[in-house]
Amino acid sequence: VLETKIARIAGAMTIPMMGDVEFDSLDQKAGEAAAEEEDGGMGMPNFDAIGVAMSSLSGTTFIARLDPYGKITSMDNLEKTLETAREKAGRMGAQMLAAQLNAKNFERLAESAFGPRPDKAMAVGGTWERNEDGKSSSMPIQNKMKMTLAKHDDEAFVVTATGTVEKTAGEVKVDAGEGKADDGDDEADAQTKEMLAKMEIKNGKLSGSAKVSRTDSFLLESKSTTTMDLLMPSPMGGEMTINQKMTVTTTRTTAEVAMKKAGASKEAPKEGGK
Image (tube, rainbow, N blue to C red):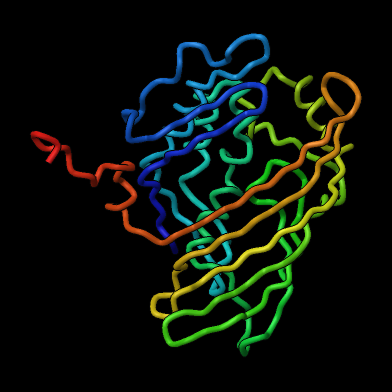
């Protein structure tokens, strides 16, 4: 059983042809209300509401139950928090944050604390297959990976991964509880479902590595990179191609360090610049 608490959320998002949004839960009081207008008008999201929604997750505590190999079996005390965050983001904002504000993403976060590991004893150079759905994506994708125990010593072991990103087979489902902020948007759901059903993935590749402590079994550091070209119908007609690259870096730290703002450790200038 793993009790996980989100101490701080900070980040920045750039939405092509729309704008930028930055957020940091240190700048926002816990439980602060969402922006006055949930949506920005003319089909645009309200970036202030998106920032409020993401920051509101700070302080959240949830319980994850895992098997002996670090795989999630169940999670508690999470869905109500995510539902509140989606409401704060507004309809458009909730759709944009569908990959972040869903339980699968938090499963990935909890599992990442332990890093990848085989389900049997293995020597350096040994390999195993690992297939998983896109827990950090709102799209119907799956990752097929070849994992390799690259090296180990008395303190840690390193696992590398290479693989492909493919579209999942079967009917595309749009979960109204994940990425939808109200109940009257069936038309938008139908359009999203059609786009995802017709979506094609080309050149989907992924690679990465993870270093895990042999002292306490927690992850020390990891980095993964995913690239793919998405072809799908455009809401404006015709087709559009999205070239996507995502890099995720995880570094073990402490709550004390995580709560410091950039530059906070620098001393203030003294009189005369000395």
